Image 1: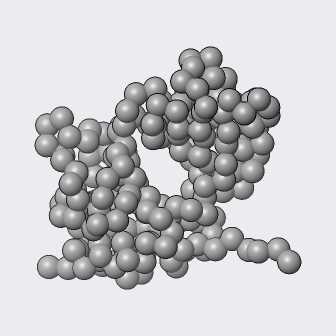
Image 2 (image 1 turned 45 degrees about the vertical axis):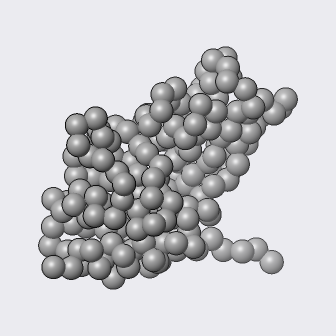
Length: 192
């Protein structure tokens, strides 16, 4: 028996689609079931390992807290000094994992599938900042979360990864089991 991957809410797996329960004239919420995700963890804090992993991943892995880098259809998020999330196309996930693990047969670094663990949302529009700051400890004041940075935090009392792609453009990842709750909470916050 082969299991078929499923999107969390209403989007077909491998596609991006608006969240039907979300309604706002100033913001748009989409489920991003087209984002594949690989968790890369290193056993050592070593520049050589980071350089080899970056070459295999096709994107420079960020070296600083809260940073993300893009390149070759990839987005790499810094999680800790020795762990990163790497976005790729859903169909490219297995190949990326195989390539990264082949570079490290000694297991100095290890790549694992993470697509099924997280549900990614894209929130954009003039009201997006207000919606996010309503239920989080995220400071968007001077020195808060600038464009080009990511942060792990709580939103609506659930763990999330927030990526600020632009002034009003965000990617938010929550555990798959919390996705419906998060979308409903955001929908309720958007109502006048």
